[in-house]
Image (cartoon, rainbow, N blue to C red; front, side, top):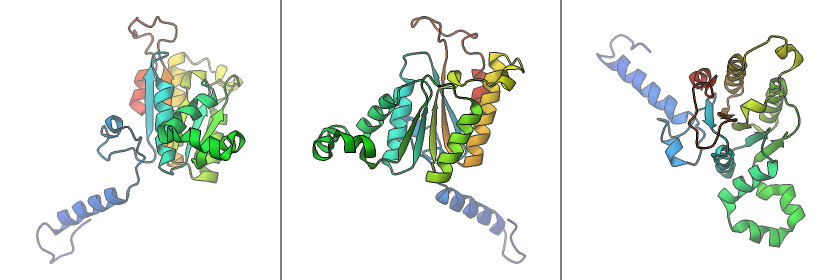
Length: 231
């Protein structure tokens, strides 16, 4: 933004600074509700179009963390979608609800009944798409996210997890290595987050076949470097 003639020295710089401050002020961010994570961002949360990767070995609590974040987001009345390719949907719901309601769940069930509670889930704008045991391709995931964003104006999506996405016949015919496949998925999901204006939390498991006490090797981390570059 260039200062008009006659406005005096420094006017253009002040205008640019004011514009940046105003833009940041109105830029909506999605807060995870976990202070240690939100503080990693200068804006106290993650802006639309962000791809965030959560990677760890098996049984380290990835689903618990992701479910907690989804519960926190929905607890703030922000529509959220959890695509559960591996964990049971009930596990996700139990964690998300307990984060926000705790002991009040028991009181609500006593008041409304189990059937009514299961139907409404406390009114939280959280949708859990359970696909455990059902082959799910990248194209199906993209379609599900776009439909949910269009119908509910969803702002946060968790995908659990990357290694369980199924390749189509056409994708298998390309003979991608695991590293190339993960890179392809990461690029596609990064573009999806930008297109839909959402924060997409991508969960990835490393060292699946290793013992719990063994440190991940470079082989176990294959593909994560490119994903981290995208996230």
